[in-house]
Amino acid sequence: MSFKFKAVCESANPKNPNESSERQRQRQRVDLGDESEVVYIPRFLGFDEAWTFFDYLDKEIPWTRPTIRVCGKSCLQPRDTCYVASPGLPDLSYSGYQPHAYSWDDFPPLKDILEAVHKALPGSSFNSLLLNRYKGGSDYVAWHSDDEKLYGSAPEIASVSFGCDREFLLKKKNGKRSNEKRKDEEPASKRLKKSNQVDQHSFTLKHGSLLLMRGFTQRDWLHSVPKRAKADATRINLTFRRVV
Ligand SMILES: O=C(O)CCC(=O)C(=O)O
Ligand SMILES: [Fe+2]
Image (spheres, rainbow, N blue to C red):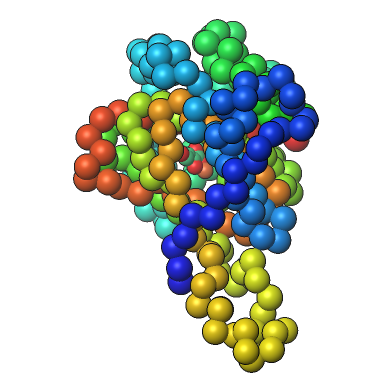
């Protein structure tokens, strides 16, 4: 299994000509194959602006570290969390835990970030937000996909990161076909290439960056933020989602 980062820099975003040329230049699109795709914008927010958001979120969000159930056992979730959603949406529930849904009005800066996300991703319309705080390198999120029914069959998830850089990994789910054709569909002369299948990807999610997962990424891929001994500072991550 190879472990490659295969980024394609798009020269422009034709859907949004007003976007700053610097941000457009930095936008990287990674085609995961079979209609799954990731877009990464390293400098989505300005450096200082992102630190202002970090300080606000670190102080003002009512972070909790809930007890969840994993493989039939109760354990402390290995990171802090909070949940914000528009009124009237069905409740979110994961790993036997149902977070309280706060209102966007409780945290006005979150509305500013949401607006910036919508501007950068024309056509998007997120109505809920899961916040995570990793207080150091031993906080993590295990391999999972955000494929809960309430997000529909091909959810877009926009992830904004603040603070300490952390690695974000994607790996293809077992049994899912890889990007390339199956062995028996190609001549023997080309079969050697099979060892180069790209079924894992790694991104370093930078302070102020935006990563979008779309298409069938939740159906066909898992993602994680693994423990990292050297990540000794706090990281805050916001994942914007649309409950349908
Ligand atoms: O912290 C991250 O970058 C990812 C968080 C995540 O995958 C989630 O909240 O579902
Ligand atoms: Fe996730």
